Amino acid sequence: MTQHPQDAASLHARHQSVLPSWLSLYYERPLELTHGEGRHVWDAEGNRYLDFFGGILTTMTAHALPEVTKAVSEQAGRIIHTSTLYLSRPMVDLAERIVALSGIPDARVFFTTSGTEANDAALLLATAHRRSNQVLAMRNSYHGRSFSTVGITGNQSWSPTSLSPLQTLYVHGGVRTRGPYAELGDRAYIAACVADLEDMLQQTAGGIAALIAEPVQGVGGFTMPPDGLYAAFREVLARHGILWISDEVQTGWGRTGDHFWGWQAHADNGPPDLLTFAKGIGNGMAIGGVVARAEVMNSLTANSISTFGGSPVTMAAGLANLNYLLEHDLQGNARRVGGLLIERLRAVTAGLDLVREVRGRGLMIGVELVRPGTDERAPEAASLVLEAARERGLLIGKGGQGGASLRIAPPMTLTVAEAEEGATLLADALQAAQGMLA
Ligand code: PLP
Image (cartoon, rainbow, N blue to C red; front, side):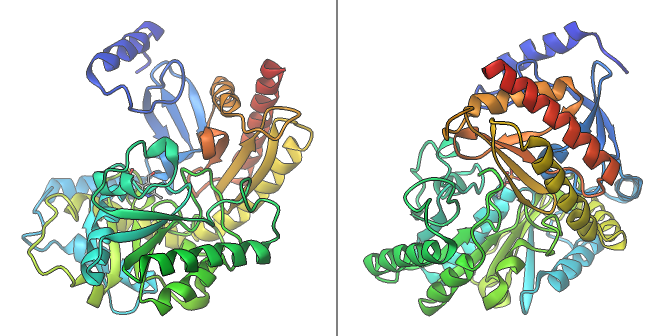
């Protein structure tokens, strides 16, 4: 049902008096979404948008995918919740599928309700296994909003305090767009980052539990380390017995096109010791989890429980969504349509001074913005482009250092026609924003 603009305005006013000020909302006039279908969503005023952000990569396959809706409603009609005190068939079924897909030998899965909680669990396991509270994380990373995951988040705009009980050391190597190593070629860059890491390890005398890294930095603006960097890191860490945690909250399930998991792009030394996932697997339902070798998973000796983790309704959604993804080869679609979209975006932005770079893997595409005529990042431009894209019926995300990158991550069923349409709308929005900045 379509609402009047003043209803939306009053919702805006009401939210300000009941929700926290730091809840980050896009748009001057916040968007209230009411329903979706396929790759489109509608707002309360009846406007339709092509969704190029998939609700922060949560809508992995499509909005209102009938297979997921059916699985959820059938399961909800039987039993909604049993807690992990009892077994539920959907939980065991989904765990079996994830174990088989994970690539981790003798793996076990622990289900949570978010990516934050999945990373928290991974940190708990790794620190218990290694009996150390020191961890390594990448600069510019994002791992969640709990006490421990904010503490290991390297992106300054998302980690205002670092009072977490974990001791975190930040490693070079997630981004190279600027900074001390900007001008180095891949091999020299990798050598410099590895030397930094070795130096850090020497100073900490081997007491580190784990390194956590995103294969493609998500909130960090869809930036990728050069090929070979993580493999080189892992070789060093393995010598010290330090565990590798691959945060696949954004990169899992084939979104990066060439691989099912992000770690597989850096697979020279096999699967990670721990892998965390969330976002897309539930197609919007709250599922997260950690996968680890039994030896690491069973490091916890005290009892533990997640009241809502593994709830049968979310597990049923995850199973239906995963089946759809595999049966329709959405990884292949992400590779094909994502590759085409990157090319198209490069073509339509080639003449725009505002755009410094279009980068990405599969359907994770970042567009970095600079002040025209300079090399300075332009976060103010990102907000203008988001607004201009909204006016044209396109939803995109932003992120990156200082918030100067656009993030594009549509549902993985995106068609070629929709990719073309979105690229044209975005080029138009970029042009309009560039005009406003001139
Ligand atoms: N890890 C990564 C890489 C993420 O991008 C996010 C969320 O954006 C998280 C963890 C936290 O997940 P959640 O918001 O589900 O707690």
